[in-house]
Length: 591
Image (cartoon, rainbow, N blue to C red; front, side):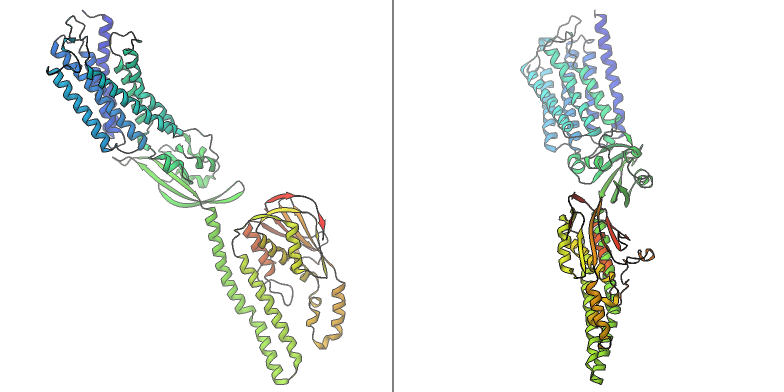
């Protein structure tokens, strides 16, 4: 009779054959999900394997024992064929190619045909009929040559499955990497038990391979369903997610972040976060009102803006639901976040340029009317009276038009976005700009030699306008253009010229911790006017265009700088530029 321990083992096999069928619940419930059908096939094959191994020790007939043995061998073929198909769908997210299905199908059918014909006595290529021993111990199999061919093919299938799982582990991260690591072990469990038994390392009286296969299929089911991999599988993740320049975050139905790419980890300071972290913790750097769009929305296309690292940033957000294929149950959502800060800035600059065009049209139609009417009136008066003194008014109006055109051209250039930022020596830029607007009535002092990041030509425009504005507004209006006084005021012309030549305006360029300043020694700007000086058209001189300081502000904004008007050291006007990228500070000098 049977040993008591032996009976217990066989009964456990039979119970295992029934118990493993409970794993069919998930693939039968979700038959259209990736790997479900092949996982179901593997479960049935393992169950048949356990049933055959457990039962044929209780059958003492020649026909019954060999029928159960054939069932076991064929179940092994189906089991590991299904296993590699699961591995293919796991690693690619797609169904196995038809060529693979054809090869595996031919292998299974051929093996079944050889088993049937061997059982019918046409050959003994797989096992010998003399293997049967009627002593209560079941089969004592003597194997034929094709048995070992079959075993080699099975080992190859197991090896290829492990390779596919291992490759996915090596190329993945986060939850998927952990899942792939477990999957590597699933086919190895059965293979290892089989190899150890054949090598007689394990002193079992019967093959323990189905025990290892059962452990493997249980782990396979846990990864595919308990950890909900199939429900939210990232298809072709290497290409679609990890290599994207956009931030991609996958959130499950319980608002847990289960996967993200490197860009998302960097963008939201979550490189060290763990899988399953609550979404509000992952997006901790995002304001609450913005976070609600990530966590409370199932599907949307929107734009968000918030301040990050002290600067305003703009993002285009696309949220798409992940639903089950069979019952449309919401399983989670994919959040794709694209940085559109640069695009937003260019859009704002284009809008501003459109505003400039409208303003230019207004300036041309309004501000040019005055001097043009004066030119026409003076020309008519000259023709009627023959008095050439009216020509002085023509010349003065012409000068006003020329100044207006120059300022309009400079203002138009400031509307361009800054594209050529480089390292600029502030002292050299100041000297170059000073040579362009040099006046015998003013001197320049550079208190600090600073290297900043700026567009050199735009910076020169800014400094030129500041120097010109300081010189023109630091001297009374009647003294700025004495040559334009009429002949009736010739006596006062000489006095104004002497006063102008004796006036000395001090312009100073200095550094700040986050920028630089330009100030003059003139009369300054009253506090109540400091908010208005940058408005287009605002001027305190009779022939000013009111565009100079507007040009300064636009150049500063194009660089991302803030400009502030305050009182200078000597009571004059001081313009401070903050938010400048200062690359180096060194010594000071006078010019």
